[in-house]
Length: 635
Image (tube, rainbow, N blue to C red; front, side, top):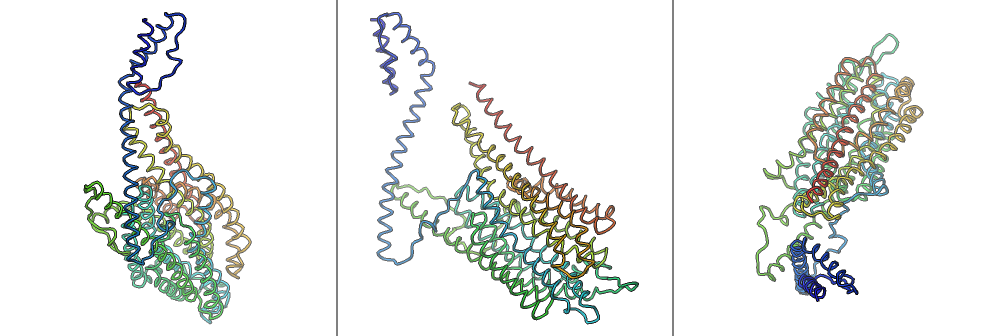
């Protein structure tokens, strides 16, 4: 009787808690003592966690009930919403957006090697546009602009004059556009977070603000180059930057080089507003993981520039001005394609946002409640071009401000190298111009890796922050699934950095071999001057070493930007630029020493970035492990 009473109590408790009743738990045997011992043991263990089990069951029951109500409510909303759409279709012939057009869900997670390589390859084709256009200009001017200079100079020397004029001109034009890259970086950072949150309001507002700021900054560049371009180019040339020695005679060609360089810069500056807007639009499309449109724009720009150089430089003999005209036309076409695509994406986001607002209104009518939040600015009335208000401008400056100083530091460093190269004569300046065009052409691989880190890492960091908040809220939950989920965010970020570094190392070797081969064996493609070709071959090994380190440097830099560690990034560039300027001022004694300085600049950045990224990832992982161990010790 005792064993049967205990079994009855045990079964009653399990039925009360609505728990399954395993038959093996109360199967009677021929020995009553064994039955009592078995049931007593079962009851003792159940009494220990009876309150915890009952509370969990109550929570689970409420979740299931809320989920059932939510499903029924969604079905009711869908029926009402479909009826409303059918009624609208009867009275309106407006084209409804398709599902493919309104999809705003992007990949957020740990990308595979295949996805990373595909993104880097397509992004490389995109970022290679500007260096490719400058490289084509250098080749066209060096080969066909020999008769575009003074008649007193030989055609061979005239080619060197025109090629030397491209150095300061492209430095001013490319550096001014490159300086505005801080807007594109801020765009990538803000959009990546908005995509991770699926916040259409933030996406629409960000595009409107950054495009308006880009137009304003591009217009400022147009005025600056036309008003202060001559003074800026003169400072780059220096006093001996346009002199050449023929035997015992020294010829000063500074006025000719300055005139040609200024003409190139002013023609290129006409496209500056559209170029800055296109650079921002390109970053927005890459952040949205749309690589097709930028690749199309690059193809159009390359073909247009090649045809333009052939017509204006080879046929019309317009020299550097013809090259600038061809590049400007190509820039207009390519950036127009990018801006048009971003505008279509902007209007699509508005359509999706409008559809979501309709659903919220139906939900309010069903629940008879007001769940909407009052917003300072309606995204549906936001124009494509607008200037941010005070609060939005402050938020944008907090991201773009440090990036501006980083871009300024890079421009200062490379410009100082150009100035120092010009101090060793016009041949050295022309050689430096060609080598820098080759270097920047292959450096776009590093820019593609940096863009990959800025595209994929913010989603992992945001997911990790959500998981850490969930761990803080549920710090008394010791389920294995929670523990695994909490550590996945940091591990995924560390794994992605490793994959990027492996790809960067491989691409660095390829870039080094290809870049050195071009400088060593293909110098005649850029110029027919024997002294210039010989100097390119002499400097090529150090350019190859710099290209070997550049992809690693940019991948680590992109990881730091994705982590919003802008303070450390600015401090690192301050130290690196000071070291580079000191090298050029006190240690560099000839033109070869300039490229020694470029190698030192790459080595300094990669060492500082690598230590920071590795320590930051390791500390996050260690902190997560400590939190997990603390949870287990509590229980």
